[in-house]
Picture 1 (cartoon, rainbow, N blue to C red):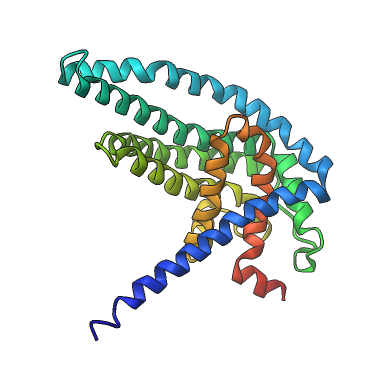
Picture 2 (tube, rainbow, N blue to C red):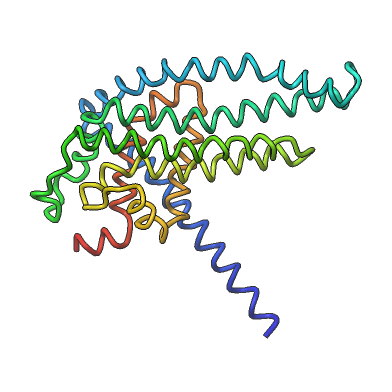
Amino acid sequence: MALVSPVVPIAAAGSAIKEAAIGARMLVRGLATWRTAPRTMAWGLLPAALSAVILGFVVVAALAGAFPLGTWTADLAFEPGSFPHGALRLLVAVAVVGAAALISIYTFTALALLVGQPFFERISRELDAHDPALEGEDPEPWWRAALRGIAEWARLLLLTVPLGLVALLVGLIPVVGTASAFALSAGLGGWLLTLELTSYPLSRRGIVSLAQRRRALRGHRARAVGFGAAVFLVFLIPGGVVAMMPAAAAGGTALVRSLPADRARRA
């Protein structure tokens, strides 16, 4: 019996990895939308660029304050000029930048979706255009969706800030801290990004509120996190937040369409 029991968690882990890989491939499907609807996708660059300019000030502030904060922290613990002082200074700076990246990427995505609601809704509709099961589905009025989006953004931001602080503290752990903080940010940040990027396609299916989206995605968490983590990583590339935002929006719809429940409904 002892030889058999470990097979279950190993199989479960393998299934989770497979699901996460499927989720990551949804971003690639989103990129493929440039071939079928290039004009629609190009419109999605405008709100992404505007949001990137606004959030750029946050990133610049984080980069400007990272090393001074690291120096101040290291001065409290070690003699300036010593190896431990320099190592702690670097660790704190990296942790601050990582926490700022988590908060900034989520805030950018929510802001871009809010500012560019007509454009990203149109991108999502392009992928659902030939789905007979969605014919006649009327989305909620734009003003109601905007108000709901602002309220949900504020709720998730209240969660993102402490997550960023946790990632900062984890990043201070010697040796494994930086890698662990990065994995934590990608995983938790990926889940939050997926909740935002699936809002349009799920609302078209009658799943409107944040609580409803959580319930719909909870049974496919590995796939959802895999998609969100892939978006998180490409958003870290300089210029990636703007260039990849339309693909991320399209990928959110592709993710919803890939879920077993949605495929069964359309069968």
